Length: 338
Image 1 (cartoon, helix red, strand yellow):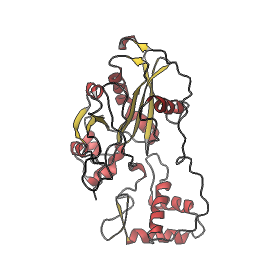
Image 2 (cartoon, one colour):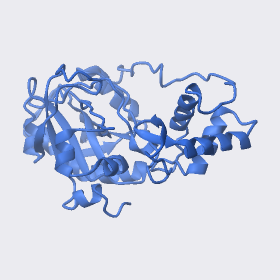
Image 3 (cartoon, helix red, strand yellow):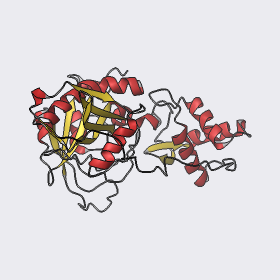
Image 4 (cartoon, helix red, strand yellow):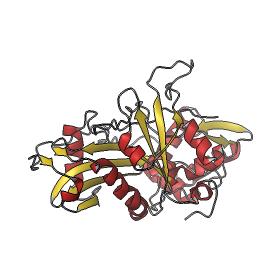
């Protein structure tokens, strides 16, 4: 079963840069999707399919057995037990219990397993997340000078730091797409010139399937499923509106390209070997990406992930890629993994 997805976009507001709007479909993150070999799922004698994975009768029988062995466990506890039994963990070691609960609920509703009665419905703060605060105190006096005249640029990863809210607020207030909570693994960079913020970059998991990229990398469906987490997608790129400095955008991309893999390693216990972005050519030219040596690999189909009638309903976007190492293909196509 092949999935086709339209890329999420960052709709960059930098002059000459453009990333398309997100299609609205959550993109599957590898870290919380069961590994094909690890869980021993099999496409033979398929009984149930979940997130492009096939469960056979033996898989479902094993789940029933775990539930029977823990008759007093809640649904939350059962999800942890199943994750432990299957070794189902994210790259940073955390259990994939939320996705496991979704899988078990789908099986329960389909009549394949019997879950215990739901004991409580905790408030989902993520589902009802409010808009980021935009009343931050930031110096907005104009910065207009040559690149060489700027104070030293410092790129700082701010997710889960005291400056996380500042990133969200800057994107919400000054980016025309506003702030959207990323899905799966993601990082946030703020770029400072001295003590003043001048730009923001957002990164997340890459879309499940993009034809030009998959052809460029050369990975198979099974390998892509296993290694999708080893690449990152630039979801937002914002130069703050009071900053007017030529060539700043491409310089910032260069800083990010040199640090992103190490930042990902610190956050998620694995590096990334490839970066991806998309340019809506009806709106932007993608100049700074080209100046930073990103490669144009082709275009998206313009159909989106929900398309079933092969109708072009979205603008086509240039697919841009940037390998972070010379041996990126061997890393992404089944080489020695971290």
